[in-house]
Amino acid sequence: MRSRVHPSLLAALVATLVYCNTVCHDFVYDDHAVVQANPAAHDPTDLAKIFLAPSWGGSELVYRPLTIWTFSVQHWLHGERPVGYHLVNVVLHLGASAVLVSLTRGLGLPLRVAAIAGVLFAAHPVHTEAVANVVGRAEMLAALFTFLALYSQRRCRPVWDVATVIAYAAAILSKETAIVVVVLGPLADLLVADQGSLSGFWRELRGRRAYLYSGIAAVTVAYFLLRRRAVGAVLGDSAAIAFWANPLVSASAYVRLLTAFKVAARAVWLLLAPFRLSAEYSYPQIAPAASIADPGTLVGIALAVGFATVAIWLWGRRSRLVLWAVLSFAAYAIVSNVCFPIGTIFAERLLYLPSAGACVFFAAAMHRSFRADRALTAAAVVVLVWGSAAAQRNLVWRDDLTFGRALVDGAPGSAHAQQVYGSTLAVAGRLDEAWAEFEEALRIDPRYVGSLYNSALVLRDRGRPIDAVTRLRRVIEIEPRHYRAWMALAELQLDLGESETALAAANQADTIAPGTPAAALMKASALRRLGRFDEALATLDHVLRTDPTNVEALAGVGGAAVDAEKYDVAVSALERLVTVAPTQGAYGALITAYRRAGRPHDADREAASADAWFRQMYPGLASGSRPFTRTDP
Image 1: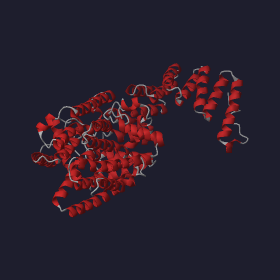
Image 2: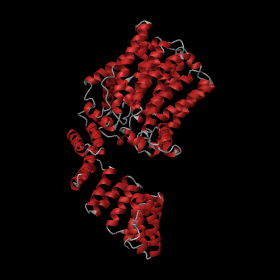
Image 3: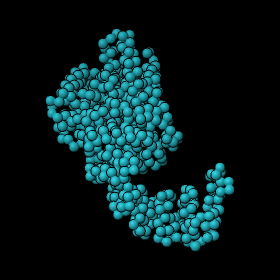
Image 4: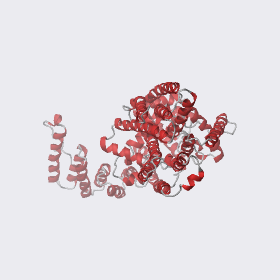
């Protein structure tokens, strides 16, 4: 304990031991949309897509470009193998735990307090959601760079001030909660460098500090300008928040405040006794407070009064613990739904940065309440208990099926939990079980759009297209801009021979998401069924101008042009198709187009090339087989 290095290493070791069992986990839940299916998370050189567009797989609320950039770098390095993503998450957590020790010590608290705070933070079970779920990386990056910014500021040198500004920029570009540095930086100067003297603080507001604060302010302004450019507004579009995710989205400011007290009481309980954890807090797991007499609200108000009292008492004693109280309060206030609704009413990952202040307070309380040896013993016991609970909790995030089952077990009254588990079962091909989960979700909430949509897909796969259409129409009635419902409806109506209705549905999808290739392809299919070949070709041509190698569009042009007896157009498209994606069907369509165009020699030449390709692709089947030489003209 005499060396400042050893406590940091100890915190890092504890974090590694507790969370190393997450490394072999699969992608789970939000990981699929944010990491796997998000184009911005695939190419680290496409900075416009990363920094000038919403970050979280299309969500109009989320802007975390540095987090997305780290995903894109990993995708470039090792593709979609999840082990690398999880390993980086563990490394970030152990790094944050280690830096927290150095920061606590650098802000003037005893080394023993810093060591205990670090190991408590490293082992806290409430961090499971942030560490074990890949998308939780935003929390850890923001916390790590926030700690680094505050630590480098304490070095009080111009070169370290530059490092502070850079670290703050990295933190706020990882997640918006890092804006707490704007308050914590000056407060740290006041309490640590100026010993709580306001007059001394004002005297120092020139020279180095003026440049430092100006740099932090410039980064903050630049961040909000980038955010506005990316998501269209400083806060984003709250209309995009689903009621089940945050029922406060349409509540009054008064109800939001009462509910925030209620949720804060739960947050404090989880920080003190993190043993009944859940990844599911959506409606109705947490319902808006009906009045100030709501028991949860009363507890929250009492805790807020107690917190304020302690903070005032600490300020009077010029205690440096005030800084950690402000860290916890400010970091949580940003995500509390008081000032504005966020994408969720509550989630454990939101406690990652606020928990740092709580862990420092726990450590200071142990240090003050026990003799040195007993304080260390008490900390060891807490770390052992918390670490065991966290390691066990990590297993919930092992794969989608395990996670979905845990959601339902922990929140059986949640329509969203039933929906998530049902979707996972459907992907696994267990349609009967999936159907039961979707029906249970709809029993809880008959207007739950996700389960209406997914149950429609199950009906489709069971060969009940008319019933599926009925459910899709219900989805659209509740949520008229549900793009995937319009697309599924168009596809089903094409299968049912209702081409006019299918075209109308495809047009609606195209209106909702203009320029989406899938909607244009669906429109072209409906137009072709209606015999409107020229319109179909024009629609497909628009797709190909954007993406000249779109396989479905090339195949569609080939088919529509043959139907319209424009064989030269068909040949041109199918030649490109064979070059881009050679398949038996593509070769067969091209040979047929050649023959229809009156070009038998080209057809024979292509048939010979196709036979050679077939023998190369399927050597075990090719002996004596020449499937393309006898193509029916």
